[in-house]
Length: 543
Image (cartoon, rainbow, N blue to C red):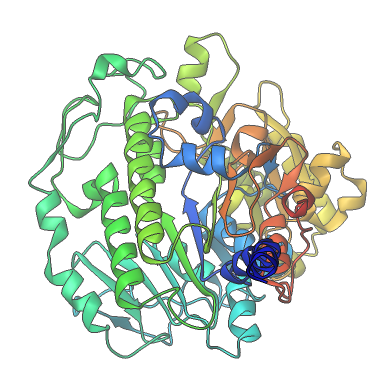
């Protein structure tokens, strides 16, 4: 009898173990952590790979899922549109976020992407417009909005970034909060769109006066500078000099709040407030999935100043790697490994500095477009009459004065021909000029034509778009770099997945930024955002 009882017990053990294991696996993630890195090229993952720690980028790459061929699906690759596209799964043509700024025909002035004149700052008494911010200019929902809707607003959603647009747009319309850094006061602030008073934990965080601490530090390289063999030598004439310095060389002094952001200390400060939010808001510790959106803005400031091949950029990423490792270790300790989902991507990539390209016999250059635009306006005055014919040239787009055109009975196609002929003249770095009002007759490869169509919003876009040749960009300076074109180096960005329900692996199949929101919707089993055009990334769902 005892032997029979023992046998029955043994037979029941696998079933019992299987049930226990199944019960311990969560049916949904406790938390989704969205990490945006402002101005991160895909090749930063591979170029600096050997110097990364085991627990940051390498952990996401080797234990998670790497979408190696991930690109933006539209032509205007800049910060506002990038953050909006990731979380809406849409395009500027639909979500309305066509730039960081755009000329509003109805208001007759330039509008900032996160501008909201109906709200005021919370967290600073210093006068200014930094607090007049909200997501009202975004015309579609985000995946964070959809999570809130799916749980009848019981999921907690918070956005954090040094740049206001980097925290506001990802968090969506219905977020519990979004916080950003105010350089004037040195505080992390929000607006009355979200709340009337900062939570006590944010007040306590501001009371630490971290900016004052960083301004006592010097930015030294993490490793001996001779080991930065993946980058240009220090002190290149085409790098910008940091504020208060005479040469673009290490070590760098941190003399102001803006200098903090143009250094790895900006990322460190963002990490610290993200950890404070996780702890004090008890994110991931409730009955519903929470969502923390974190955007690291400092790589963009450093990249603009020193380019894609600088020791400054390499050191920024080596240090960011450690910041990410610390956040992941914190989530392991508080929520448990495998109970949260992480994705990491970027709002855009960046071009190499043209002077660096030219030094190495590669094509590229800086287009000083203001001179050509002034000449164009002069040509129109001479041909059609006095007036300001060109109202704006934001986002590589030319906005015409339609009222003046109507008054002088000038047709759009006629003006376009004048603009195109002038900008495509001999020796010009302009590749093509696109007439948004006649896209059907635009002569350009179909692949790129789609990227341009995805940018055009009838109420916010200009009339014509100027496309520069590869390697060229529009800038007022020949030092540093920028982004914003349709070419691969501006569009190819990382996309890493890790954690709950994410298999280890990689794919080289084409994925697009719009696919992120669609994939999250499928993982969370919720509705995709209202303007989503993406597709769930199939290899992630193969078991």
